[in-house]
Length: 93
Image (cartoon, rainbow, N blue to C red):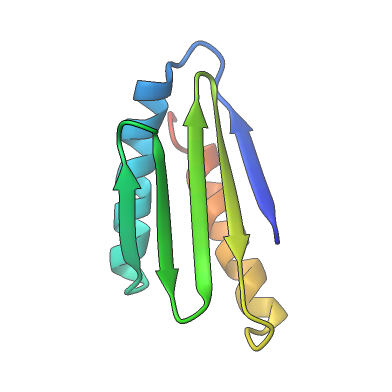
């Protein structure tokens, strides 16, 4: 299960969560995934047919865990990972 972590020094959990929540809503809509979030815990999850991604935000960082079923081709997995990484890299750009 790939894990993607990004640190945002000087940013609060609230600031990071607002941006990650917006990013995940857009990604879920684009890929027709269901999206659940918990603003109090600063967590969220996207999922569809065995594919899932969860995230947790803390002060200064976010951690995203991705889970794919065995039937998903490696190229598709990598494409999703790269898309999430790119979006996180541009979160405060």
